[in-house]
Amino acid sequence: MNTRLVAARVLSRVLQDGQSLTAALDSAFLTVESAKDKAFIQALCFGVCRQFHRLDFILSQLLDKPLKDIDVKSLALVGLYQLKFMRVKPHAAVSETVLAARKKPWAKSLINAVLRTYLREQDGLEHKADQFQVAALSHPDWLIKQIEQDWPEQALTILSENNLQPPMVLRVNLAKIGRENYLQKLTEQGIAAETVGFCPSAIRLDKPVPVDLLPGFADGLVSVQDTAAQLAAGLLNVQPGQRVLDVCAAPGGKAAHILESQPQLQELVAVDIDESRMLRVGENCRRLNLQAKLVVGDAANPSSWWDGKPFDRILLDAPCSALGVIRRHPDIKLLRRVEDIGQLQALQKAIMKAVWPLLVPGGLLVYATCSVLKQENERQVQAFLAEHSNAVELPINADWGVAGVCGRQILTGESAMDGFYYACIGKQ
Image 1 (cartoon, rainbow, N blue to C red):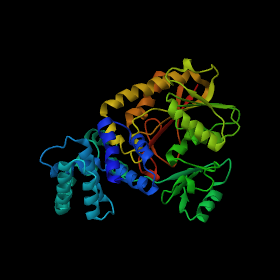
Image 2: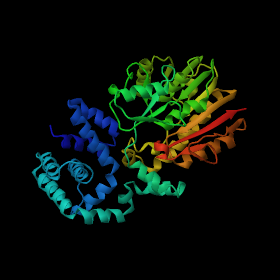
Image 3: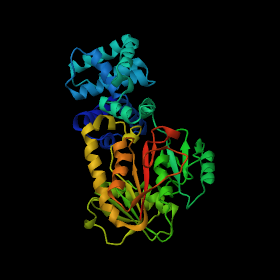
Image 4: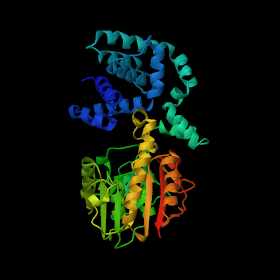
């Protein structure tokens, strides 16, 4: 098996078919047995997606005309990524990548020429890429402009952070073990880590490790969840006996954290429209030994699933562009389109309007996204408040994020976190 060829085929599914990188990798890994091979293929695919716009520009400089064969183009990108960003010996990167094209003789000679020319002219080609903004920042032009418009002073930092590998962060199940005690368990296993001061459940690892090496993972002592996502449960401030609704709940990390933080809830109802993703919510709850009512339903149409009993707390983890988690899902840069934003805004507005009547007077709704765009975040909440006289913003006093017109925005990379937005809305 040629791992470069597997990686190229995965990338073709993303570039040509619009499949998510996660789904494409999951499919490819069904026929890959070696954990080492899987890790290498994943590194290639994530790396090419992260650096796609730079690599694509350099490839265009090395070709007389654009490559129409996406499989061959993907293979060329895999080769360039190895030469620029990996510790693979150049001769091995070239020979193995060329070998992967053995079924297309014309492609073998083309890829060989492209990669060897790059090695000879690397400095000049990289300098050219640095002069071209899309290549230098490795983001699509529309996204660069949007982030520059919303965050002119922080844009370069956000874009740079998007191209870095994110840290692995753990959420300690404080219902079962103290954070310091769990940190000690990691130390005993030789896993270097540190606590996150402003988030009482978070531990950030120095280096990612497989979950089966985490002490007590199978027993529910800990879960993997970015620090920014862990802030949701604290903002909800759930109390014993309350009824909580988690809207757009899959894959269930926030729902689990809510249940861990308040074991004496009356009930937590988790709703998501995607049946396959709701299976993951169930899996998470079983591993953590938590009880929740899981509902497959359309959040914008509660009449199809709501039992008529109001909720004291609602977490609306709204469907969004996910531009705050590009570090973890770099294919977002390839798959997201500017026209998606308006459609997502409309959906966010519809869901927030639909679930608002389900909240009791005196209750709290926490609106959250993993986006850094203001039109999905503070402007969305601002418009909602203007249209609902019984809604009032409750300020978030915190040591994280940037206060906006409404709510609080975490910009990608702040305290090593993903980009996230939160707003707390009280019902009068």
